[in-house]
Length: 426
Image (cartoon, rainbow, N blue to C red):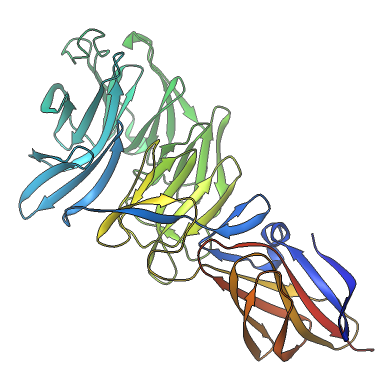
């Protein structure tokens, strides 16, 4: 929290204003803006870096991380391909991939299903084949041993996957025509014992037990506007998705708007999202027009911007993958932006004083090397400031308000900030 105390520095008697990182995050009057910083145990630390460059085909326009593998769909001239980037295989496709899902057999074999607009396909034991019993669609999911495909306002489903061969049969397949009032189906997510059916204007939970005669829909109350297509991800304890009025979470007890995106940050449409280790990732456009990654942690209720400019994003239990340049890379827990930009924090401070104030020195509490820019009134100063050192300002700032901008390199942390000032008698 904020505090004012008497402090003695050699040859100078002055006061100080001390704010912690937690105080800056919790108090809106500070006007905090953070790019490529994330909150961690009461501090701001530089956000995720990247590592592991892998060359991929330049024509890849979509990434899918399913079944322990990474896949890329590419349209090259008039031909369409699915690249198995994990096993270095290539499959020819007749139509554009719209979504992918996977099913793990009792023997531990992963079967990958691929939806296109007209057909569904599968990859099993390295063999690529059409699934004749299920038509194509815009989104696909495996839930309770059935394959589901959403297209328009209709939901198609397969028979239960046969436990001996895991084959799909024509028998006991079906199609549910939903009311058109809710709009098109834009996402399907298996969550607990329910299949969540996201439509443009409504959200449904489907109880889908073994007998399709017992299928039952339940409408989820929801007031965040239109649901963004391809944005929903299972993050463990909740499903996170994007809607017209912000980022939302769906849990067992209902749905709520959970996080307000920073000013000027807009998700790309259609959404490009991923989930990893309980966190949610989405490609966004910043106010500058540059692409970046938004990361949201539903357990903590906080989000941050990761400054890697990418058009591709995918995530699984192992990693989050992006393409900030010409190569595919993995996110690391901490590191510098791939484009060479500097992580930065900016915030406002107000001093409580009865007389004229002279701002004379600063200290960044934490770890790392920083460049500080301070502005009070029409006066600006810029200084280099190693962490935990009291640095005199090269030019005294006058006034009770100051805007601070802090830039750094990789692997830095900010626990707090001190501003030393002299208050003249009134």
